[in-house]
Image (cartoon, rainbow, N blue to C red):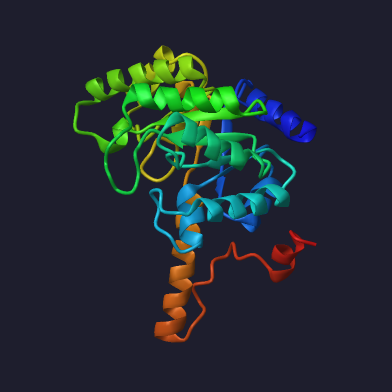
Length: 273
């Protein structure tokens, strides 16, 4: 518990450093080991990657017990702090959600990313007051200084102008921060002006997504982001390579598409020796 608390404080401090915290999101033990070896000071998980690696679609379909087991493997495979993407938090009521998070803390994680999407393809958001209550319940009941990254998904679902969505996001952000959220993740924003306005108006650290079709890491740094997530970016690149190799092998009987970045067996196995 003491070591977990130390890692939790380290993870928190990384959000207030001179440069933003950039997180490559892992989905299993080997990707976590690789990211740690490259030099990332902390590991975050990708819910999409964890779900798909275990045979489930993204969006709240991964059973809680499977998430616990997957997180335990990631946490025990690295020395750096680990933050878990727990999607909508599994519970609905504040008490249920806090109880699920309390069980997840036992895996050794020091942070969570929790979104206000209802999940399961519903396309709706939790009422902002209820989501704030859920965050408050987590904040009040967790027995370590858990870092709560509260994701706001209204830009993901759209339906309004960017200006209207920004005002909605600011209102939710203020409520979530008052409830105990440590960082606000404005998800799905592509416009740099909106990103800069979010940073100016949201108190505390603000998280944005980088990756294909999104602003670059350097652009987000210049805009004032405190935390930059890559989400499923590495997963998509890795699976694209797997599909290409498999297609060439099946269709042409060749292995010519093996990328130059292919890792040797010795290096890959060496992460676990």
